[in-house]
Length: 219
Image 1 (spheres, helix red, strand yellow):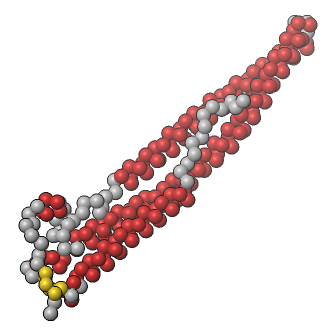
Image 2 (tube, rainbow, N blue to C red):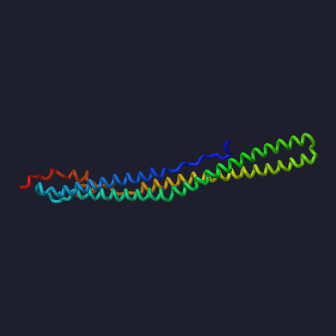
C-alpha cells in the first residue's frame, strides 16, 4: 500500500495542442482565401454585367473579406498562445511531474522499509523485555527501537512533505490550464462581421433596403 496519497495530474498532450493550433489556423486561412477569392470575382462582375445605380455595390464584399482577415489574425494569436504553452509551460510542468513521480517511488519505498524496521524492532524489544527487562539485551533492543522510531518519523515527515508538493503541483497545473483558457477566450477578431456596406450590424441595415439593384446584361 502506498504511503503517499494523491495522484499526479496528467498534463495536456503537447502533440494534440500543436495539432489544434495548426487546424484552427488552417481553417481560418481557408476561410480568408475563399473570402478574398469571392471578393475578387465579385469585383470582376462589371466585365459581365452592368449594374445601374449600384453605387457602393462593387465593394460590398470588402467588409466580409476584412472580417475574414481579422479572423485569421485572431487564429494566429490563438496559435501563438497554444505554441507558447506547448513549448514553455508544458515542459516545465512535465519536468516537475517527472521529479515528483521519482520522489513518490523513493519515499514510498523508504516509508515501507521504515515501517517494517519499526515493527521488527518493536517485536524484538518486547521479546527481550519479557525475558529480562533489566538485561543488556533489552537495553540494546530499546535503543534499536528508538532508532527505528526516529527513522519511521523521518519517513512519515517525508510523506507529508511530498503530499504537500503534489497538492501544489495540482494547483499549478490547474492554474496554468485556466490561464491558457483565459488567454484563448481573450482573443478577438472576425467575430463582429461587417456587411456589404461595411456596417457591423447588417441586419439593421438590411431593413432600410427597399429593393435590390437592377441589373442588365453588358452590351
